[in-house]
Image (cartoon, rainbow, N blue to C red; front, side, top):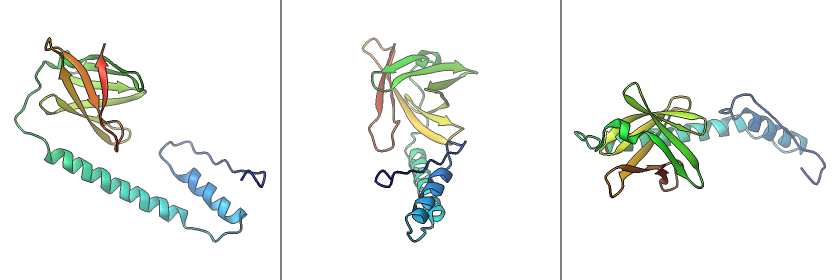
Length: 160
């Protein structure tokens, strides 16, 4: 509250909690003499709506899968470092006969979805994304396109 000369900082030691926001909003309501709003209920409703949306996206992903397809290359051909000027590097490694993706500090296991598209799964956040590879004129894998943001197009990463 810049005009009042004070503010609130609420911290938590878990990145996936809304508790600091709930506490801060509740304190603002009290300090400003406003009616208290059930912030915990609002955040829970938002959380449940997001979970329902995530499930709908997973269901749509499964429904769009084309059965009986194979990747166009051996898995080792997809391994390597891929880069994007705005998003940085993605590294794909062959681990235990499967692909594993590292982006920033997050690890994702990849499973074949269809054709040259793989499903990337991050266990920590229970998050699933699609990764689609494409080849250059020489036939070698040259690019990975990853849908990093829900409401944006895929981000293209060039293989180094």
